[in-house]
Length: 258
Picture 1 (cartoon, rainbow, N blue to C red):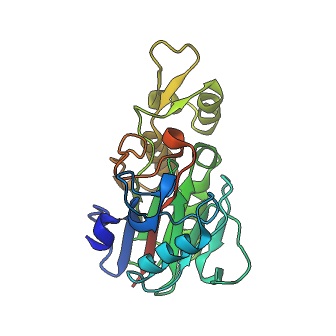
Picture 2 (tube, helix red, strand yellow; picture 1 turned 60 degrees about the vertical axis):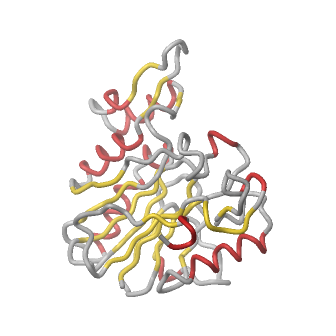
């Protein structure tokens, strides 16, 4: 495991051989304080927008870069559903706003930053098109996964497989009625099964983001879905979590064509 445990290789059985993917953890970097590894050591914070020292974040990104075939296409995520072409995101170039990216060329790295929101990586089974989506509850209810799948299909993707990365889990994601209402509108007749009342907290629910994402993907015609077993909020020694800590770093999930 590279970066002193700072990288996870997805358990993704049908990932094409010509596609690479990884997810980072909070370990193996140089960030300190709330951006550290939670054990008194340096953390691999990759977010430039969270208050960490910018030079330290760039050093962390440089460490990660050594494992990748190209520069990650870092985009400005806004909890929406817009999809950008990762090849058009260049280091030092204009900031591109969106919550997902796709790529069709070798060495173009789709990248998503998270600290509780659900990262979803995609690849078509022929390894011709890949994608990455940032699925916070707003973006997930707003259709970001379906938009990513549609963009991949326009780019020539055939059958698609997906991997759900580390995110806040179903025993930790407390939400209000507004979130349940948003998903009941997005998934009529299906959403309620992914929510359960929070014991002792009237009007509050525990939401299962993985279950909701799986249903949204099925609606988009994607049924090969893997991952989804890691909780950012409860695995404090491994992941950053905004819900748990407030001021914290960001981990990344990335996919590319070799």
